[in-house]
Amino acid sequence: RDFHTLGGWPVLVSLLSDALHYPSTGLDDDINSSAATALLIDEDRGIVDEIQSAAAWAVGSAVKNHEEFHSWALEDLSQAFDPPAPKPVTAVSLLLANIEAYNTDDASSSLSTAAQSKRQKCLYAIASLVRANPAAAQQFLELNGPAILGTSLDRIMSANGDISPADAKFASKVLGLGEDLLGDVLINDNSNGGANTAGNRQLIESLTTQSWCHSAVALVSKGRSMQVRERSLNAMQSMAPFCQFSQGDRKAVQEIG
Image (cartoon, rainbow, N blue to C red; front, side):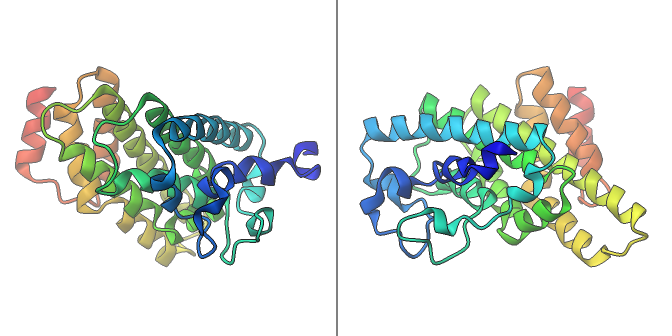
């Protein structure tokens, strides 16, 4: 609480934006943008990735261990930048922007160790923010979080050859987050007597698109570790009522099992 009261939270979250590390990028229109990435030389990019990785880990740990951060994580921090950002900026929007940066055609097919760590830590922070936090889950949905992560899954599954251990771990964590969110939706829907059916349906649909459903099946067969396969199977089980898994999908899973 003291950390937030003394103004430490906006400083910590702002570290997730490239604009803070490379302010002359002309990102006045959108602080959440990853446009600064292209202007950073490789050496600077690695240093910034390490800083942002540590910031994402701190954000995730704060939210995970202190319930008060559940609401603070949704605060608009646009005034924390100089000049102030013209659009709302939150921890969720910046974390998603960092992950989305790796979904572009310009992103390297082979991420550096620092980039892999940052991507993983950003996902950890997002998961900490949205789990058992309906308000954060709603913002995650409004910011197209499920679609951004679905694109990440598509890129990983469409890669030629074997999936790298880092990509497999990231993909399995994404699927694990989807499984948890689906569980939260069903629990909230039952406890509220279906009062938020429309919102819940939208979240369910966004987490059970072809990208999500196909990736769960693909990772069961492509994942090398038992832990990755187990997460994928658990995700499939949660998605089954909403995904149109074919007989071939089920047979492929049975053969692996």
